[in-house]
Image 1 (cartoon, one colour):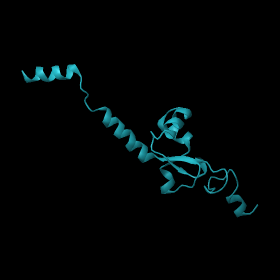
Image 2: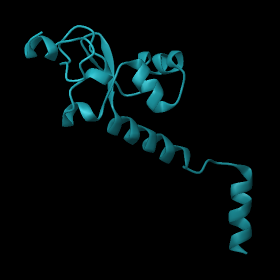
Image 3: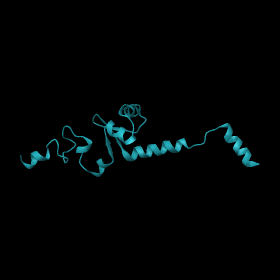
Image 4: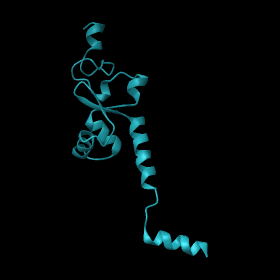
Length: 108
């Protein structure tokens, strides 16, 4: 087997993404692909949820994703920013009766 055949062997970690059967483990180590979540299983693992739940969130546009061919992808940094926005939105005080009472008590 020559070196060219070894480069394209199915188990070779240096295999290129354009080859058939590329998986996140076989993507080249490159700054662009370093922050890439390639496929719903990778997105689900990153979000620590089951794959069907992640697929639903990706399909209905809740999670910011894009496609490379037919593969749903996302950037780690984009998902982290999206989660931070969701977290910040959850901290907004809501109108509750006891909030008004606390303000009145503080005014006295």
